[in-house]
Length: 108
Image: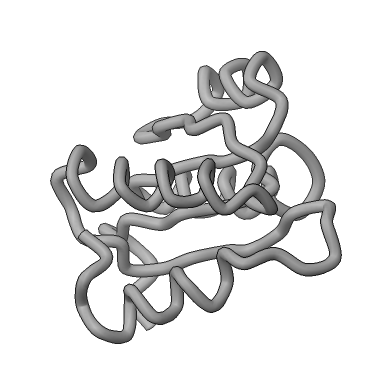
C-alpha cells in the first residue's frame, strides 16, 4: 500500500484514534480531509497539520454525509484513495458508501 501522496478522508478526527491517524498520514505527505462534529476542535487540530481540509459533520446524519461526499467529489481536486472511519458512534453509514465510491472509482 502506498503511504504517501494519497487523499484520505478521516472521520472522528477531532480526538482519539481519528486524530492520531490524521497526524500520521499528514506527516507522511498525504492530503487529508478531517471530519468531526465539533467545528472549533476540528479547526484547531487542522491548524497543527499540513495538507488538512476540515469538514464539520455528523456522519450519522445522511444529509450531512451527502454534503461531505459531494464536497469531496467536486471541490477537492483529487480522488479519494483511502478512508479511515474512527467516529465515536458504533455504526455509521459512511463506511459502506465511501468504500463503494473508492471501489468503483467515483470518489473524486
